[in-house]
Amino acid sequence: MNERRSFEFADPEDGWWHVQLSKLVAGLEALRDPESGLMGDTLSESFGWGVGKRYEFARTIGERSVSGAHAQRLWAEAIESIAASPKYEGLVLSPQMGLLPLGPDPDSGLWEFAHLMTGAPAERGADGKLVLTEETGIVLVLIPGGSFWMGAQSADPNGRNFDPAALPDESPVHEVEVSAYFLSKFEMTQGQWRRVAGVNPSYFQPPGGLAPTLLHPVEQVSWSQCMEMMERVGLSLPSEAQWERGARGGSDTPWWTGAERESLRGNVNLADQTAKEAGATWPAINDWPDLEDGSVVHSEVGRYPPNAFGLHEVAGNLWEWCLDGFDSGFYGHSPKEDPVSDPEGSADRTLRGGSCVFAASLARSAIRHYGSPDYIVSDLGLRPARGITP
Image 1 (spheres, rainbow, N blue to C red):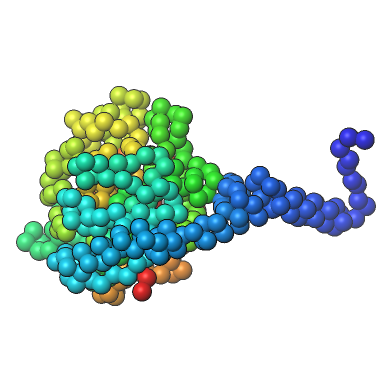
Image 2: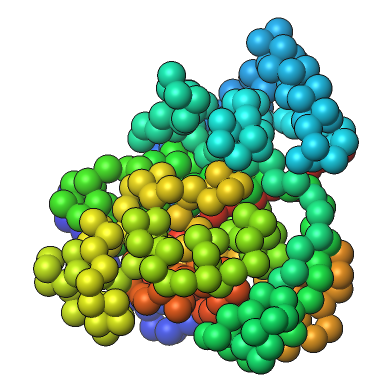
């Protein structure tokens, strides 16, 4: 009675329909599974958050982030401080559903916010710096709006954003005005992705020795996967303009650390002798023969010093997806205000920032790289962003 039955059909079309209907039935059964289905208070690889889990979050998030007494007190302080800060030039911010103010960074002076759907709010130590755990959710920095010069050029040493290594698609250098926005202080971690997706797709992950904790950034995620996941949690990928403004942190030099490669020492995770000694054979290791950054592959987020905006690992560690479709000539016709190269207009998507597998020249603030929407690799992740809601 327990033998597996097989079916034979005289008409091949009937056999095809049998297979399809069997798949449909299996899918419906998976949907209603109490442990991993869509309807329960569950977290599964197939569906992420179940409906019950989403309902409970939606039921409580208003009070936790905006309307509760604790949240109201934090938002009142944040709104008053931001409006009075010369860094934000009178920005009037309203409470943002799903976010909770964490106060300003003690070094950058920029305000930071916990994204509650991706984990526990970060806490500050006695020195005012954030203390991260595997359970910590995304921390968003409120980046001031304003103008900056985007791109790089190698023709005029006295001109704006001069960089001897600048490539043609980084020109022309052009002024861009960006509205205030939120940008993640760190690359998205494996713990944060797993909490909302139910799976950790990373190549280097616990319990492996090269990435022993879930504070390492998530990788092996495609642009399409990132877009789907960010929509689930009320976030987005940053535009190229948002990414570069954040990465520069007010600088106009090839790297946020300065004009010389030596300024990167101790501040970034690139292909280096640490990786070589561990057996890595990446060609870029030979680019800087005496660099030792202490990391074989990607490091835990926050290991390296932040730039002037308080953002960590914006150069090296992982490439980071951007919202834009890749257009090598976009800078020649880019709008001045909040530009985005339409993803539907390109077969590829833009990624920025370099990684632990590449040399310093590919971690410059202006470097532009690209991949197909379904491209995945172990040195490519994301740094989430979010616009300001009215």
